[in-house]
Image (cartoon, rainbow, N blue to C red):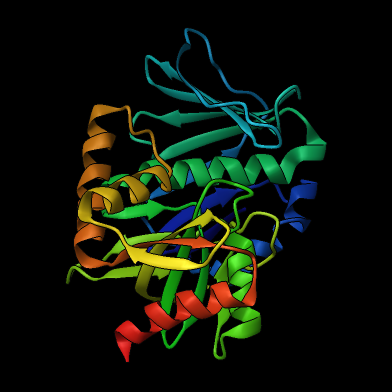
Length: 293
């Protein structure tokens, strides 16, 4: 059976055999369920095998402790991705993608890691397929306040989730939209919209909601609390480093760079030097919320 999901306005299909235990593990996708469509942006099918004959390595991600290991290979007719749950662990799955990323076949090699494999396959295909649709899959934690979305961006373990929790505790009217992988899309009128997604890292926050972007803010650990606005060059570097996508591919890279420029041109970007304390939330909210009073 094929289920359809809509994320940031993009519909994709996932075909999982009814008897597969994975069917009972994907409740995080339920808020995004939608009716079937004739032409989804991409479709993914679970398969018993994937042919990777003739593969050639084109990308191998950094092997940071605790982070997934992703390798991307080219094929004469498409792409192969291999993912391990962390460095030193066996490959969890092998994903075949067509040249334009519109069709995928996922072979799960470690059944105990099936949900991890499915999530990573869908995140990868979503990021690659929608790169030319003014859409970015971001690595960020997002708080909503006053009808706008505020994104905290930083490397893993630097304080994104901590700062979101400080807003939840100390800034009235705040709620969490997503804690790891929100979707950012530049809409037809040029404004930037932030969407929840079925992917939220270790925090189970799967909200099918969307809000105009309030600001993008880099979290930087410091011995004091201070916020300052980034110039366009600094803002571009921030958005670039916090988004997913195969940026080394000329075509996809051009699409992504065009979207980065639109986001930077339409949304304010900041850096917050901060401690993990209530005053940090006071400093950031005092500046960011004031822009829209």
